[in-house]
Image (cartoon, rainbow, N blue to C red):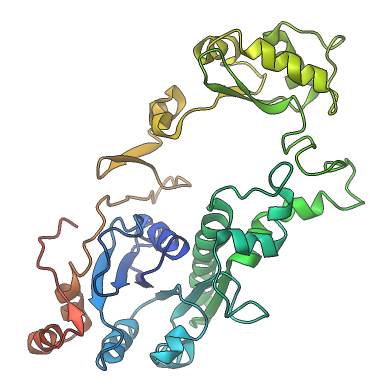
Length: 379
């Protein structure tokens, strides 16, 4: 696997940090998740293949333990607000001085500095400040659940930063600090929105208010339609030749229903036609054509769709279906280990690997600096 041999210390958090760590683990890195005491099992649901060490940060010896762990790590993932790690003497000024090759990735909402840097927030707040939320939705801005900030602009961008820093380290031999924040990350993921709004862009893509443009729900040829059985079809017939194929499948002609962005009558006509057939019947009409019409597959059934089933795009984890890692690499493919660790499951073996003696570990356990659940590991 591409990241085999790299050691990652991930301080437990929610959403973006665990997703970042999961990406690295899926592609071969050894990821130790540092959990807090009494953390509910599988709270982040993105811990597959990681090992868990439970440390109580309030205990004096915790800093000694975590510093030693980071002394030979390649990557540290910090999901806390600015200044939290410094309170425990685990900031980059301390750890990077001790381990100059360390990649110290700081995953926050607003960044390490700035007007909002110390303020609490969630995905919707970060993408609202980034400007992206203003372009999403209909009559009012609508967040695409927490996919844009937490995962696209957060965890994925942080993983990219880590891989870039590891690549550069091969040349310089030095680590560095990464400021991966969801305001800038979600804006960067959405760069196309800025470039296509420029007056110099040859085709005006956003001439109308939000929700009334070609790609945001305003066009009948880039839209979803309900079918006879209460399911939906997705239409993305943008280019003229694809629009022609779409009209042909609908039994319409371009003379009657031209590709007009503001053709509300055409939208209504298409909606009525889609209600005359079931989703399966429409798939028989449009599958393997260039009409750019596909079924809206329910998330719980995505693994059964013929395309996904053929490519084996999903796998089973703890009784649930989850996506395989992407992208696919030809020589060093990802090999995701499926089970999430129990909090504290690997505490003892991690500390032994770090060089602590058994008597020291037992003392840590007795003092409740660390917690160990003696569960047989399947990793």
